[in-house]
Length: 77
Image (cartoon, rainbow, N blue to C red; front, side):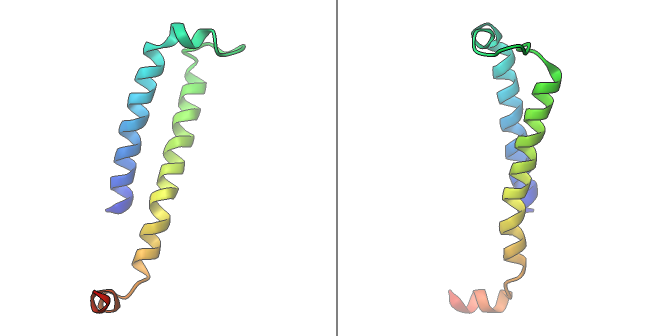
């Protein structure tokens, strides 16, 4: 549940980022060197790295939370 929520947020962010990059191609054209601003390989690779890092960032705390005994955490409150 935690990982799914994190991935949903990451996918929305990546979609908005790609949309923004495609809308801002004229501005970006002066900033990139030897790469088209609409290069699909670059856009897909960047999106994949961002989604993978978000998955890892969501998975680590979720995994740690599954190792805690629920009775111990309820007693602590």
